[in-house]
Image (cartoon, rainbow, N blue to C red):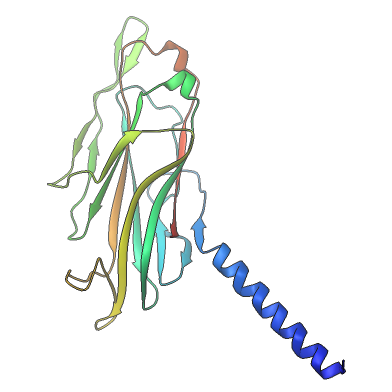
Length: 214
């Protein structure tokens, strides 16, 4: 075999390998400690024609009391024309033998600047039990997912999408739906107060939001 042919075969093999790697890793995930509000979003990563942006991709329940709620805000945004199906996942780290079903998660999707906001309640003590009574304002949004936080992968949502160039890149659910510059998601953690949670003292849970094309 001539040297030139060997070089061409080598180039083809490398190209096939790189394409295989790109397909295998057509998902994105990122972990950042929840340090409060940030002025700029963190671009977790992108896959195909969309990406997930998050102010904090990981929430950790440090110093959280029963009855407290916390909101993670993130976005699905277009980065190029294309279509497919994306899945939003949550990787939970939680001792289910300790927390049981006390950590509930709910996912909300907004398209018209609706917001999901938590109002913190007062810290209350009853004997040795401390708790809060937080309230949640959803501004008319209803959850597209509700469940108990599980250790490992929690599949929250799957949706078809299409990115089009309509005076700038926009994302829509299908050809009949309205196109938007982005979808905003709110993930609510509700650490429920069941009045007997002494075994949970000192324990934490956390969740990392990610997404992938399926």
